[in-house]
Amino acid sequence: MKVIILGGDGYLGWPTAMHLSAKGHEVCVVDNYLRRDLCRKYDVQPLFQVPNLHERIRIWKELTGHEITLRIGDCCQYDFLSNIVKDCVPDAIVHYAEQPSAPFSMMSHEAAFLTVNNNLQSTLNIAWAVREYAPNAHIVKLGTMGEYGTPNIDIEEGWLEVEHKGRKDTFLFPRQASSLYHTTKIQDTDLLWFYVRMWGLRVTDLMQGPVYGLETNETKLDTRLSTIFNYDELFGTVVNRFVVQAIAGYPLTVYGKGGQIRGYLNLRDTIACVELALLNAPAKGELNIFNQVTETFSVNQLADMVAKIGNERGHAVEVQSVENPRMEKEEHYYNPTYSGLKELGLHPHYLTEKVLHNMFSIVEQYKEAISPHKIFKGVKW
Image (cartoon, rainbow, N blue to C red):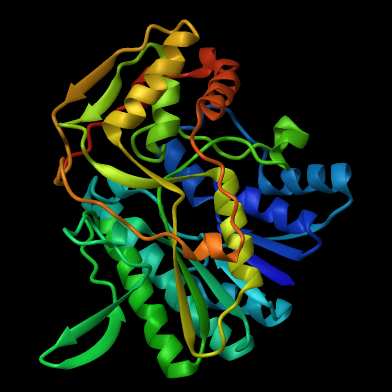
């Protein structure tokens, strides 16, 4: 396939680009380095530096012989994005090009404005560019399980059949986000569902849980091909943060009662899920929705697992409950369905002790680079 990856510099985007390139797909990555710029601006740079996309692509070609093309620019600029779609006429577009942090979106008006503007405008531009220049292209958008919130009923896979006054119909499962970031993802879903109905677009929406991990088969080829790894409150996901905190001697910060349950998945499985979505495109005028998680944990469970492995490795890990800076339920029912991707062939990598040991062994190599002041920023909402 010809695949455009928007947000191809990111934690998920770059490993996805390499994986699809290795499989023989013709890959073009697009990015404007927004995440790198925000990390510099707010002093939350990743654990280790990675080369820019030009250099990464050169290294990739030297090691594998595979070519990845590159466009640097902003997906919120319609002329820029539409020209790429017009020139490439892709079979698929993977949409990672969003501000991905819930805490960042709640930090200030400036951050909120950036989140709304970037996320919705990029999604709108993709829909229009596909309609104009690649009407058969398949849009794969990374949504989030956070769109659903924590309802007191089972979370179905995207859709809910409702019976009311003797009649039945099927609707998008009710959404109730707990941050502005997650709200923009709901609006993404609504935008794309609208254009699927109006224009006959083909879209897959992947409701992804928090991702953890550092390695894929491709990143292991050379450390210079590593993905961006944040460990701060703004851009670091909880398992990644906890592993770094354990190694740095920084108490594992459990918010409130720690009973918040979410669905999680390994970085390797994110890439596998995107590939499965690409290989199983919906028909024109259809919206596929998959819940992209492999298992669920409470924050307390994650903290206990990380502490156990950290202590085994001699780190004397402390778990500390702190006042919850977020407006969220700390104890709740949570039972999502996530069978669709497994039925397509996903073989999950679960969060085992072996996986955690491997994460520790990698991060320990960068122990001296950890800056404890970056870990907790105290964003409240």
